[in-house]
Amino acid sequence: MSDAIKHECGVALLRLRRDNEYFRRKYGCAAYGRNKLALMLEKQHNRGQDGAGIASVRLSPEPGEPAYTVEKSAAGSPLADLLGKVAARGGEFDGEVLLGHVRYATYGRGELSDCHPFVHDSGCLRRILLMAGNFNLTSTEKLFAKYMKLGHHPSGRSDGYLILQMVAHYLERELDVNPDSENWGRILRQAAEDFDGAFVLCGVTGGGSVFALRDSHGIRPGYFYFNDEVFAMASERPAIQAAFDCSTNEVMELPPGKAVTVSGDGKFSIQDCLDPQPRRSCVFERIYFSRPNDADIHRERRNLGRALTGDVLKASGGDLEHTFFSYIPNSAQVGFHGLLDVLQKRAAAEGRTVRFGQIAVKDAKFRTFIADADARRELYMHVYDVTYGLVHPGEDTLVVLDDSIVRGNTVRDAILPVLDRLGPRKIVVASTAPQIRFPDCYGIDMSTARELVAFRAAVSLLRKKGEYGYVEECAARAAKELSAGDSGTQHNCLADVYAPLEYGELTREIGLLLTPPGLRAGFEVVFQSVEALRQCCPDHTGDWYFTGDYPTPGGVAVANRALVNYIENKTERTY
Image (cartoon, rainbow, N blue to C red; front, side, top):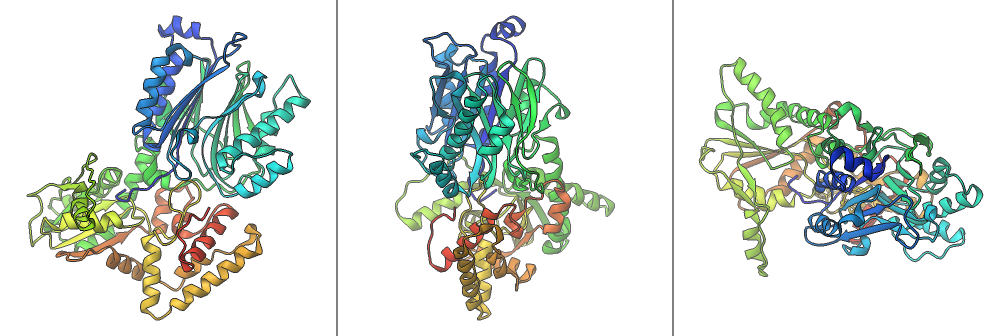
């Protein structure tokens, strides 16, 4: 993705089902669990670069010794810093239960106290609760009020704090009634009753029991693996495969609305927790977030590139001899291979060849601290280097594939100016994702309408048509929906803004907004259709970014709030 956005976190949970002596004898390693957890986190480092944390819990600790150990980091390279600290502390992290997390700060501060795992402490081992997760909730005010009604004094308002305290409350209530057992199905059902949003929650008690719970729509991803030796859970399937050398089929998807649990004595179970809901797994996972070494994601991204072939050829004029094909690094690479699959077959059938290569190279180390705005913009476009000598100046159309276009700032201010230096006759930027029209509240840092180039283009078009008053009418209806207070019946008034506009005319207006001043080449932008997206990713229907079809009531409320905030010129978050 050319635009820098923050997104879901990554979690890893490991429960050894044998004692450490067993692993030392079999594998010759006293730090078996610690090393496996570190590998699962390393393989998910793409999911969080603002913080990281690890907790280790010992089964049956000696009295006078701590039951758990926690280490966190919010350093510049938090995971590397964290793993260094854990290695230095050695045996303190050789417990039989380990919980790890990498964090993207989509909300809140980037301080050490915001890093997972969070801890609810107790003098009773089984009432100690450590939690980490990949989540964003829209119902924090409701949870805050409920927690107070349960007789507690909340010391925070964040969703992470409230989730921890709600689960701890019902865990303690369960143990008050059944001191010799933990019914995690009942505990989590009660705790998560009012969770509106997306989540995969992982928890560990001081008594050695663990759980992983997924939201009932399956919005956020979660996978698990178990055998006689271990139970492992992670946000991405390849992380588990890398750590335990297992096949794709051996790693199972965590079912939506259910929890996988391992009891203190090592027994595994799957428990119903939340009422069944239509499955709405996030499609952005497939387009961009998860690493493409997952077999299914690799196939889907390749298909997304294939599906763009017709529109790309139309935009480029179909002249393969005078077209050069490339992509924006790095997450568009697999989609680009899919595009090439089709292009090369067509070219071979016609006795022609396809010219392609890597034109743009992202300079990950590029930094500038120049205060002057004009000078800073001049340097900003050099975040991307280009390969010279491949494009024929004045003759070629240059096609570059991107996975998605959110704000459009990088395309306008960095990518197009530097590509223009190569002297192409025309530049075509093709997005494997459809137009991103709606804000997200389930983990992706796109919380306002005004930052989305598709929304700005819609407003621009309506202004040109003399119909800006229609935007104000939609916002007035949105304010009325919000004031009614029942998010479960709200209508998405932001979707109404787009209703009078055709997909093609909005695409053309986006192209105008993305065109930088002084661009010499012709320019056109191409977007995937929603229909093609659904064909490429049939099992992941969470497409509210493009359609406004949010899976939970809180999502619709966020869209309405975003529209009202735009009219009122507020830049605050909408959840």
